[in-house]
Amino acid sequence: MRNITAIVLAGLMGAPGISVSAGIDDIAKDCGACHGQDGNSEQGEVPSIAGMSAAYLGDAMDAYKSGARPALKFKPKDGEATDMNAVAKKLSEDEIKGISEHYAGLTFKPVKQSVDAALAAKGKKVFDSECEICHSEGGSFADDDAGILAGQWKPYLEEQFKLFNEEKREMPKSMAKKYTKVSDADKAAIIEFLAGGGK
Image: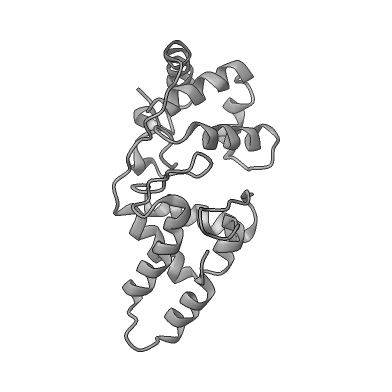
């Protein structure tokens, strides 16, 4: 994201007038070009990250940094195309910790989008049966350290399910056992349920 390398270097070198928190604030401004300045995305392909647990965000950033989690290129308005793998590689462990804590302290706002109510109702039944044990409260409970799924953009959810389907994104073994048994139709219903706010 914009000038993130310069920001990181300035923070690491302890440039006069730049505190650690100021450095994180500057990094957050760059993150906001894609994820929204309050951590709530206005872009269908990009997730909202406000309110997620610091542990989950830190793990996600580490996975992006190592390349274990794939990321798609995205070009924000008036910005340059980048992806989370490239962004994460430029951040130190302390900066990942700091930016994760920053977004964990913000409030998640579910996206308001149209969904098929009947399909979402079907998705709720499947979700409650197969997913609720780890993604409690309909995928909205941050303290699960499993990310907030309810209320995310539908295009983002669809892309992540596609990555799981194509085995391009790793998942915990406990999830894989259940996920592989869920039909494509039921997965589509789960996405509809989550896009509708997990209710």
